[in-house]
Length: 165
Image (cartoon, rainbow, N blue to C red; front, top):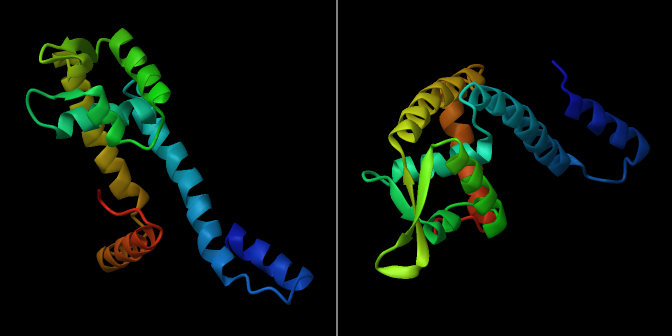
């Protein structure tokens, strides 16, 4: 079965047979998969009144364990976005009643973000549906294929400098 990337590769092979486009097969598929996955993950999170970036922050707080509180700086370190983007996401989450913000009593220059009870309920429900959705999205792969793909992607990410800091 042919996918959209196969068609692009065939066109490049016809138009520029002098180029080795094998890497394009991988990079193109990663990019297309990302777009499809983003769309489908976003649809599931929208069921819980969440945008993906908002879910990321709620999940970061949830993973931190009780009392589900982190300094904004800690949250920023766990994301790959600017401080302005984190601030905007937090503003929306505060408005929805999912988190609260307060000045850190031990360091008045720091702000602490805490999941509310409502936020905890929402993130737990969204997480359960998110994990189920991820299983569905990978449903065409066998367990062995899924593990192999995860290992290859880990190797690629490490090679690109994305180690756990």
